[in-house]
Length: 329
Image (cartoon, rainbow, N blue to C red; front, side):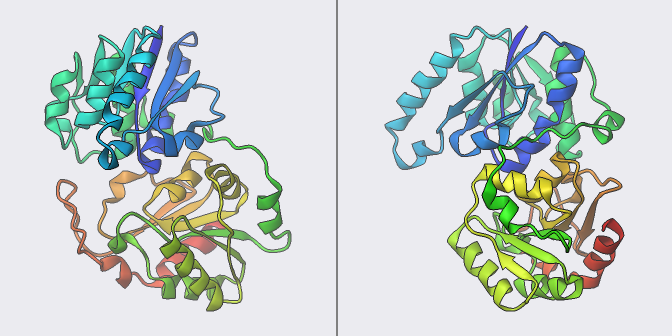
């Protein structure tokens, strides 16, 4: 059997869906799995032995250049020549459902009431029901397993194997300390209200007195990382890292502390300790395990209507985080 998974973005969502791969292969060892993904996130999938082919697209380019639409349709039609027995849209957006429909004749995805863009479900032959406010990882696991006739249980996920891989680089080894614990700070995210204050990150570093490495992706995040470095003798702002180098760093570090965003979720994918800090987003986005903990602000979150003006993350006391960190270390 040959299937294609459509999960285009973003980093954390892709990571949360990748957990299903191990169990799909266990259920059917001979299955061939291709994965359609936005160009920028190809490195997240690279190295996973359960993926046969990574199929990049650049749908984001269409926003800037409408002519790119025809080029992307042509590209997906080329991928469709692989003759898939089933295509599973694990994204649940109109654009991903269109990609899935072009890719193959038999398409599975979320039911109308299980996704934000319910119109996407009209393109699916197999529709999977799961509440929109259910755990994000469980949602991904179900949409990727139910159409194939089996179930991925919570116990399966809790006992998963690491599923992220990297190519070794000298740059990462040069950042690590052999005497102190290596702790990664993930300080950015897609909304400002999801960001824990840089001042509090600096205070946490001063309390822990370990080798703190602050990763960043944008120029704004770089400036924030440099500010934390300037205000704590225990902090180093990393150089610009590729996604491969970021994966390696998180895999080799003792702990990752960060906002609810992709790089923080990498730690879970590697079975490495982490503390995820939540403000305006629900903790149902992650699994809480013996080594993966969360700290949530006092605000109540409506998963159906997230409030980007909820800055309650700023109120979280640093000692809530430090208490968990010391237990994990």
